Image 1 (tube, rainbow, N blue to C red):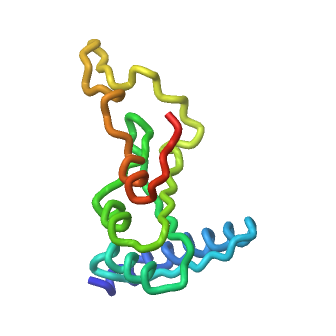
Image 2: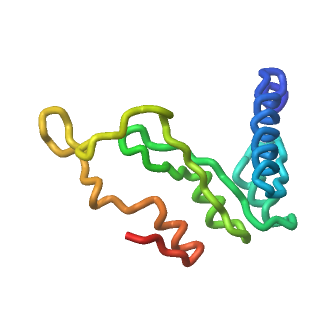
Length: 138
């Protein structure tokens, strides 16, 4: 299983992405330690590394939901937030760079029927607020 990652070129891609992130941090004047590991349980490996080192911050990427363009925190990110002992920053870039903004009524179907109320949804930041004690402005 792990040899498939190395043979498919996935390891080289991960190393290139990590190298770019480290270089970006350096340009900003921040010391960044980037590492690529192969593990059967990525979130456990990330938590063990974060909790076992001398780190100030863990930065984790998240994808955005296509319809709302809001960050999607999957089970792996939730696990990391619940088990790390250091602060975690979640970075989510826009789904489509240069795409037009989503309409305000994006939660309404073409026939006018409501699919779900975006206003009643719990913000994804709620779990971060609970973990960090930081609140976001309304």
